[in-house]
Amino acid sequence: MRSLLSSHPSLTSKFRALITATTTRSFYTMSTPTTFTHCVPADQPNGSKDVDDATWRTKLSAHEYFILREKGTDARHGPLDKVFAPGDYFCAGCGTHLYTAGMKYDCGCGWPGFWDCVPGVVREQPDKDGRRTEIVCNLCNSHLGHVFRGEGFTNPPPNERHCVNDTAVKFVPAESK
Image (cartoon, rainbow, N blue to C red; front, side, top):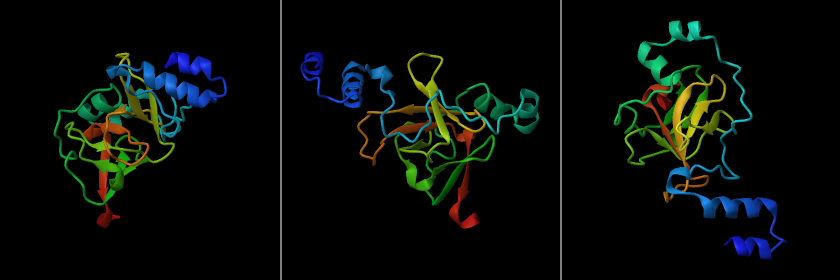
């Protein structure tokens, strides 16, 4: 594949980067950003709804603080994993609209899975483990979970799997709006 790239200088740099990223990924680094994701890149944080640590500690329960601020992980098969009713999902930290029920699918991982997000409100950044890509609310910097790509699901583009902690989102059914 690399010889193909060097022998065809007419390939655009975006296409060349996509081919290189696709052919050099390992199983654990499938979260290489694509050109059509609605996630915000790590170098474009907003943070306009973030507050100091003392305020977060008074606003959140101990478990919410652990998940949202200390980047914890909920146990699998929480209450939102199998909810597929019409409605919307909001950040549990700041109330930002993150996902719609139409973006949710049964990915089988045990946590709520979404194939896309509301554009510009979920930021992706390298996880501290060096293998995964963390997703956070771009407005308050609260930990949501992780994003995975290239797993072979048949969802519409961008066909990502946002694996989200139950505690990180609040579901509001359509009939209660």
